[in-house]
Image (tube, rainbow over all chains, first blue to last red; front, side, top):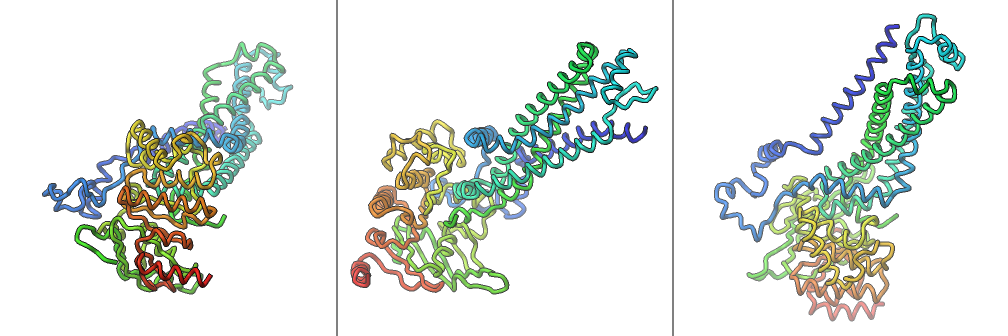
Amino acid sequence: MAWKRLLNRNYYRLLGVTFVIISLSKTLFFPATGFIVHRHFFQTGRLPGYSTVAQLINPSKAAPSTERVNRLVVLPFMKSVEIAYKSIKVRFFRSLITTMSLVLAVSFLSFVNVSNDVANGLLATRDLTLRQSLIQSGYDLGPRDTQVESSPKQRWIVILSLLVCVVGIINAQLMAVTERFREIGTMKCLGALDRFVLRLFLLEAGMQGVVGAGAGTLLGAIFALLGGLLHFGTAALNNLSWAHVAHSLLLATGTGCLLSLIGVLYPALVAAKMQPVEAMRVER
Amino acid sequence: MTNTNESHNIVRVSGVTKTFKLGKIDVQALKGIDLQIAAGEYISIMGPSGSGKSTLFNMIGGLDKPTTGKVFIDEVDIAQLDAYELAWLRCRKIGYIFQTFNIIPVMTALENVTLPMTFAGMNNDRAVEKGLQLLNLVGLGDRFSHKPFELSGGQQQRVAVARALANDPAIILADEPTGNLDLTTGEEIIKLLKRLSQERKVTVISATHDFKMLNVSDHVVWIRDGRVDKIESREELSISVGQIDIRK
């Protein structure tokens, strides 16, 4: 059927979206400094490090010892990674809860895909008894089908579970942001840029995403393989195409990371836009 | 405030008003404030709650922008600064001390002190070395690896003082630094601030209700109803403090 093929192609579309998001986040993490300098120059008529154009022409006027105003350097990327890692480590159980829904949803996705890989491996043998046992264990196989596709029902359940997972992540991350309002405000008073706060949250979510999605993927794959062994014996493993399994695993992990990042986007923006005055508030 | 030739104005506030929108009603928190603070002084801003004290305080700290009028920090109009320059100002020029300490709970005392240096782009070894020095200075040299919940309120505030000094700021802004401390601990923090302001020539500006603060202040700015009520120097104060004691 045409729409099935279309959905099959969507795997690549998903990869494409991932690529676009990665390249977008690159501009977030490593913006062309030249661009910023230019924009700043056109907006204010100054260059970073020099207070006025006049000082640029005659640098002796800019006395370094009594420099009045300068622009803050952007924190090195590795330093942000370090801070994000520490922050997760300290709040281990908190991040575990955030990651839990991701683990479950991703393991389900991975389970469905790897199960289909197992079934496809069995089908590829053209062995009629194996085909029969596949039909017995619930696969809808027409007389001419040489491929098992996930059924629409399965697909809907997977999509729903992923949706629920994103909502769960947004929820948990919003709460984490609210909990850390004072901390973020303090960091801003100490000189953190909006971009640093955004980056911190994205990095934390990215790490949680990689770990959570990785764990979920493995969990799902292991259960799928065990299920295959249980139903069809060693034939399930012998005929398995490991390339397909690897593809399924990568897909599930990638989806998981992506969901984690999508889930944190709005909470991170809320945190980044926060005013440093909030740190001064006493009531809580 | 007197402005001699050798000391310049580190903070200059001219004709500042601030209007907040509360629903559909405009509330004017500041009704035209002119103020100059000379470098190296110890200033207390006093006033009842609701007087606009905190609003003025936030303006001076570059945390809020005035509706009309101008705020100059080291003769730079903060309204003209972009996000990067404001962040630089907060990082390098101003050190903040909060009523609720605001030590970052997931970091140790030392990490809290080195964080502003990291933001300023200092390398790690130098930051750690300087952080230890600063913790020694505030008397917490042996507790650098403690987490905030292992420290008492007074110790947390000391860490905050060390953190405020991290990038050798010109101004320390202290918002009710003794508000959450008991009498003796509060007094220790006040002494510490006074000592640092004398040794390091840092301008200390604190908003406070605490009359212990008055004894060490060079000037006290009284705010009432969004205006500067009066500015007193220490000599004038000793008389009025006596009056306050009597009123009590």
